[in-house]
Image (cartoon, rainbow, N blue to C red):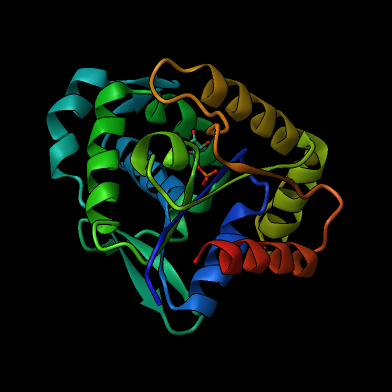
Length: 227
Ligand code: C5P
């Protein structure tokens, strides 16, 4: 069977990673969470003094961005890939609220996007890949054979994120998460470089009222139609 490229874009915390990961595992494709790459750059900024009171040291980051290498390796325990920054496993460190609250301005920087898109395109050179993010169908893989744009209401997305973080034992506040979801939506949609938008040829999926099972079924049908 021919291998294709699958681009899954959408708003934050809309469940796109879950559906992308599950599909990739079922069809034997590579799965790449492009948001994890922007989160890893943000973590680097936090840990190396490039972020002070919400201000990014843009010039310093510009000089250092080519030295940030982000890779993914399978984790046998979770059955999902972990994110590595320059060889260090940063999977849990990139999922905190601190990283979530700084990631969108970092991801809006043109040179950060350029560096990440280059690494993402290299990962997908041989096809057989499912990548999720904000600009995969529009910028990273404009020729992807299957493009999906996922959305759900901000309240539903915030609730899902709240449940997820709480299950991991993190102290979380629903209103803070809802505010973060709305803020990231705004920055992601209004930035100059590759703003979040549905590609013209992407299929729209509003999963506000779908169970994970129903969503998986829908995605499997779309894959079967194209592959
Ligand atoms: O997908 P996730 O919510 O983990 O992504 C974190 C942030 O990274 C998003 O809020 C967005 O600002 C940025 N991002 C992006 N382009 C992508 C993926 C994520 O700008 N392709």
